[in-house]
Structure formats: C-alpha cells, structure tokens
Image (tube, rainbow, N blue to C red; front, side):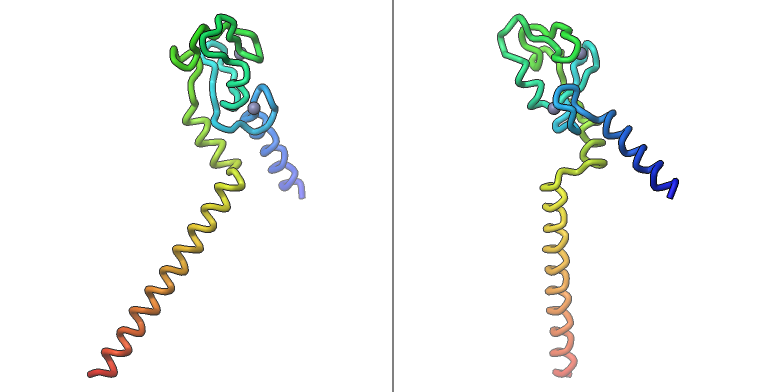
Amino acid sequence: MSQRHEVERDEDSIRKALSCNQCGEVMRECTTVVECMHTFCRACLDKFVQEGSRDNRCPKCLSPLGIDPYGTSEVRFDHQLNAIVLKIFPRDSDAQMMADREERENSQREASLMRSNSGRCVSEIGQ
Ligand SMILES: [Zn+2]
Ligand SMILES: [Zn+2]
C-alpha cells in the first residue's frame, strides 16, 4: 500500500514540474522563455505575446521578451520537454489514435495471415 502512495506522490511532483506557469495544467507544446527558463503551453504564452509589441513579457516573472520573441529566439519550443510530457502524459486523442492504428495493423496482419494460410491449403490440395 505504501508503495502505491509513493508512486502517486511521484506522479504529482512530475506533474508539477511539467505544468504550465500560466494555466497550471500539464503543458502542451512546451515553450520556454530562454531569459528566465519559465515554461508555458504555446497557446498560453501566445495570449501574452503580441508580435511587434514592445511590451512582451514573461507572464510569470515579467522578464522582457523583446519585440519579436519567437523570431529572435527569446522564446523557444522545447522539443525535449515536450517529448517527456507526451511520454508521461499522453494526450487522450493521441493514445486513442495509437490504439486505433494498432488495432488496424493487427487486423491487417490477421487478414494476410489467413490469405497465406488458405493459399497454402489450395496448393497442398493441388499437389
Ligand atoms: Zn498553459
Ligand atoms: Zn519568467
């Protein structure tokens, strides 16, 4: 029982570490402000960043981001972090897509297996 609790606590701390500083949910399309290393969902940060505005700031600590944060790499998409998030907290739709694909591949494999089996039967009968 105590083991189960530890796992839950672990997952909780991982979840916190991978949470958006803006919405508090597990990040989607992890985006890091290079200056302060605060991380947000791309969608959340987008709400605060206006291209061409001189007043772009990190929503968390108000670090200035410059006039074109995405263009000047003041803000960057964090591929590594994003991969971790997707691995630990897969999107439901992604998981569903994977399950669907697996099911499709399995049924295709079965169908081709049946075809090759019946083919062998026919040739064996023919001999
Ligand atoms: Zn967010
Ligand atoms: Zn910040």
